[in-house]
Length: 114
Image (cartoon, helix red, strand yellow):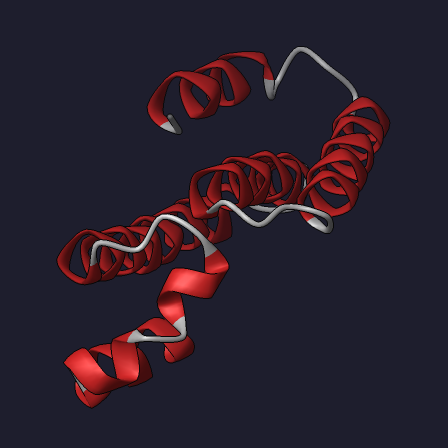
């Protein structure tokens, strides 16, 4: 989900003005944040979260590419741990995650921190 948009950002970073990247990042963050507020299914929440994080990465790209790469790596590590936790706990909605404490308290804490 992130490799193709990030390669497009890297390719167009030198050709577009920083104000366009800032506007694109702001709009993407707003759409992702507002869209994810009223969701109960974890897949939809993660999709809107991905949209919002792409906006933050577009904003960061106008500042410094080293920080962009570090942000991408941290995001990938965190998202992978959340998805693996959801797969292990077989959670499909937010309400399903409330019963993971009885399954594994450690897994619940990892999901909370991620």
